Amino acid sequence: MSPIERRDLLRLAALGAAGSLTAACADGGSGTNGTSSSAHSAAVRANPSADPARAAAAADALPRLAAGLPFEISSGPRTRQAVALTFHGQGDPAIAESLLAEAARADARITVLAVGSWLDEQPQMAGRILDGGHELGNHTQTHRAISTMDADAVYQEIAGCAQRLKRLTGSSGRWFRPSQAQDCTATVAAQARRAGYGHCLSYDLDSLDYTDPGPDAVTRTVLDAVRAGSVVSLHFGHTGTVAALPAILDGLHQRGLRAVTTSELLS
Image 1 (cartoon, helix red, strand yellow):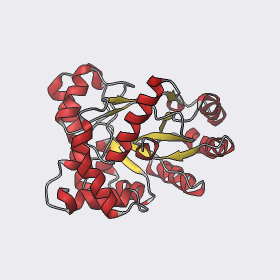
Image 2: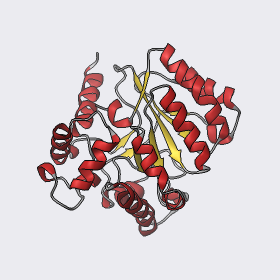
Image 3: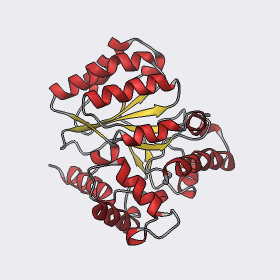
């Protein structure tokens, strides 16, 4: 392993040990080890196998670690046989339910970056996602082209979704992903930090499922390029993604790769 790879692995391991980002630690109240009881409950709910004391200790460790971590993350360590399937969350809830059912069949865990307006229309989906052992994060309030907006508008988009998440789950979520963009511009990064997010979750593999190329094409795009540590971009709201997911998950299994939450990938 090269010095750079070793440094990156240690950096990413530190991120996973933190367990919860600045937004979660900023919640009010006085739960275990200084974290709010609502945020602590949401963290344990998102990972039912987590030990409560361990989860609280991880959240408490975050402020000491966050300053040294990179803001934008596009992949995890290549030495772990795991990948993160990340879904942009909006669209027909029946399609979302089908995707979650398929994930359950394969004992897979996913990360959903939800659009706030979708949560306004489908508030039950927040609990449904977390109850499945998955992660829920922020994909802005209205899914506008965030890179073209001024700073105040960017903040309103990010903070608006964060408020919905916190109202529904007790936490504004660990992860933020910009809408209609793979990466955070300097303006978006600054406003994400202002809203309480310590990281921008990008990706290194785009499934292109939003172009509706058909399930076979989506499956090929993912399985031809996926490797250990990949963060894959996928979408709710597309029937082709539902049809492709069984083959994707089976293909990952055949390659010895597990589908895990982003936080688990980085732990």
